[in-house]
Image (cartoon, rainbow, N blue to C red; front, side):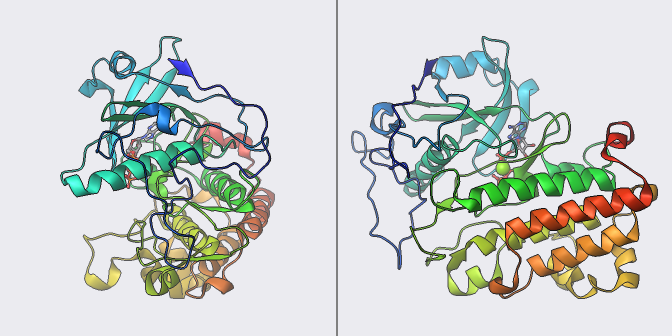
Length: 382
Ligand SMILES: Nc1ncnc2c1ncn2[C@@H]1O[C@H](COP(=O)(O)OP(=O)(O)OP(=O)(O)O)[C@@H](O)[C@H]1O
Ligand SMILES: [Mg+2]
């Protein structure tokens, strides 16, 4: 394992690593000219020395350093990728539980080679954006990147291990643990803080749009602290611009900002829309997109949008799995009202993430005040 030493402080914002484009600049219509990745021996895969992080701004320096691992170390950590260690599978590949020689338990994401050679460049770009961006971020509500492996064509991302996996599994009954209302509010507030940190530009000097915010990308720690993961589609906003125009719409169905899909305009408010969808999942326990429903009921936003500000009808969509004694209607009403504004079609009518954080703090206060249910109760009731 080779630690990547942080270089001496450089002026912010941090320049991109050599030959890479951490802005996620695959689609540059209206933006700066595209950067072409240097290739290694004519392939899409560059050797490590070409793109290791070279510099980070003082703001971007992290408490922990990212490490570089070899393939052998990845095999040893996961017992040769045994099924016993399999945690899940996503679009990027399988995720394994691993143990480092220090005894630290981690999650190791193994990049699958795409079936089409033409998609290799895109996959490699996603990997590098994830490493480049996540290595510069440091926030309690963002999953920490412990290191990575780029050995020949093999690619791995090594993250801090998140005990309770992803939020969607908890809301859809895969987990035995039923989350009560204060617990869901804690998750909503944590995720809001993580997004606010990205949007604030505090990390790298310019705002970052996550672009793939969704309940499977919200991971839960042993204390049910929410941490945002998966930065492969993240986009650094061009300096001084509030919008980025693209012809290539990336993200996940069910969470797409309608303005982004219809015009190609990506803004920070695109994440706010996706955040609103997650709020609706927390409230209703339903999936953002459920293809088992009839054609008019598949999309959660379309299902509930019109009743979010109708107190009587609202009761009917509250997740029946949620303990009734854990919430009061006042907090539910305020929460639903916030969600309804986040998923407005016009992006300019949506709140900012700072506003979402403040409103959620108020919702938590209201729920504690009326039901007398403090956060201390959580560990016993969840
Ligand atoms: N750091 C982690 N700690 C524990 N489990 C994790 C961690 N990262 C991922 N997982 C588990 O692995 C699963 C697969 O993750 P992955 O991010 O590859 O896919 P996804 O989020 O479900 O879908 P997508 O590829 O669209 O993002 C997750 O749903 C989660 O349960
Ligand atoms: Mg994911």
